[in-house]
Amino acid sequence: MGIVVQLKNQINDSYSELKNSVENKLILVEEKIKSKLSSKVNLVEEMTKYHLNTKGKRLRALLTLGSAKLCGYSKGVRDINLAACIELIHAATLMHDDVIDNGEIRRGKKTLNSIWGNQSSILVGDYLLSRCFEMMVEDGSLEVLRLLSSTSAEISQGEVLQLQHKGEVDMLEETYFKIISAKTASLFSAATKVGAILTDKENKIKEALEFYGKNLGLTFQIADDTLDYNSEIKLFGKEIGNDFYEGKITLPIILLYQKAKTDEKKILKELFKKKVRSENEFKKVLLMIKKYNIISECYKKAGYFVNLACNSLSIFNESKEKNILQNLTSFSLERTF
Image 1 (cartoon, one colour):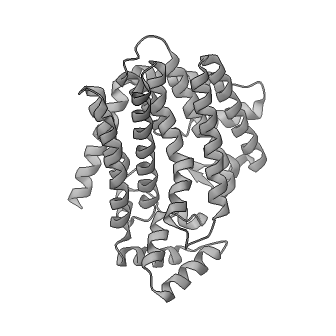
Image 2 (cartoon, one colour):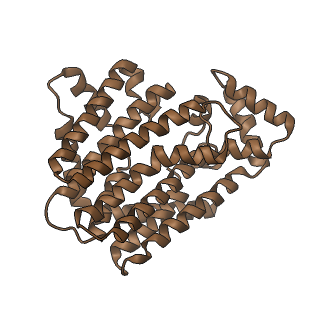
Image 3 (spheres, helix red, strand yellow):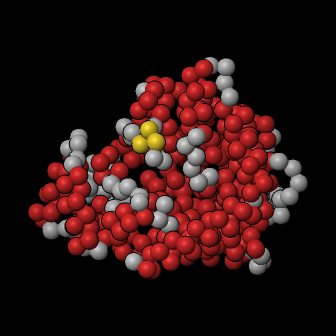
């Protein structure tokens, strides 16, 4: 267990390094988000304020600011405005996601839909997206508008694809990667590409940052899905099993089904057909996960994308900003939170 603790310290340092490098701008991002979430409708104001109090890691905003800094953007506030825009796109998709999954807890607090209902949550999510498009138009770049609008469409298609394959324990890995590429990696790649667009870099720089973001996003989502079945993570106080209880088919279950014996496959199929799954059933799945060394297999697959992300930055000269973004790939893979 000492190795895991060591990794955790290392990961926190790499994430904190990025955060500290753009700290002043991140404060302005928060202020921009607050201003854009204000509303004359009391319920919208109440729900958006509640959402602001359930702060996440702001990783996508950090990627926008970090990539812009890497590309030499220093004057103006376009990076701040677009970082806020990208965070609001992410927030809107989470609101919609919680409705689709009947999610009740997000970041340790009750979800909007569990308090105010599905209808209000969908509408407030739509309100956030409307604000995002307002910010894209204000930015004035057709390239930014094209990138972020197409990304929003891709995220929605990923949601539909996941819904289409809900409960399929025999889902192909290829389908899983299509889902997370659309749902998660597309916004990561947009966040990093924005930095190159702001500084009007040549296409090969834009493509390098886009590729970096995509592979970082894939790594992040695989790690996130794997954490939910990693019993060792409980030692750090993180609750696990949310995906199992919500009936989501993720990489650990896909790989487990591939390796499982016939009787075990039958158990898995029956479990994910049920509307409700128990804690004892989760414990049985965890035993199977451990039996077939699934956690390690998942991290091996994620490691492939870490290397792709890291190598994509080789086009840039050595700098503090480049090192920070390269170190962030380890954060995405090995984080415990």
